[in-house]
Length: 84
Image 1 (cartoon, rainbow, N blue to C red):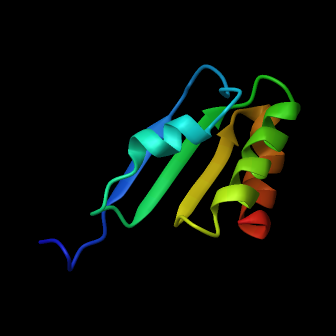
Image 2: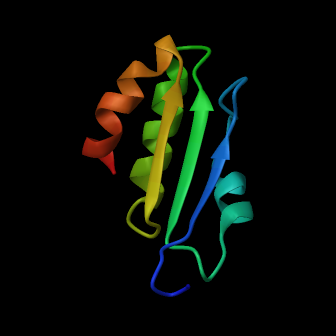
């Protein structure tokens, strides 16, 4: 049904937040995709900053959704719409 439907490619990491999310985005990239979703697990409050900084850098070039899961990830879920 493409192009009437929009395709989302997603990545979920249930264990941690990788130090760099850029390689993950590049692995997800595909010309038919409309949106990319990258969800990680915060094991430290600093993981929120990793995700928010990533959103700030890439949301202007990609239709991107990203945030952290878990109790420590709450700040990224609240701030991610504001950042990107």
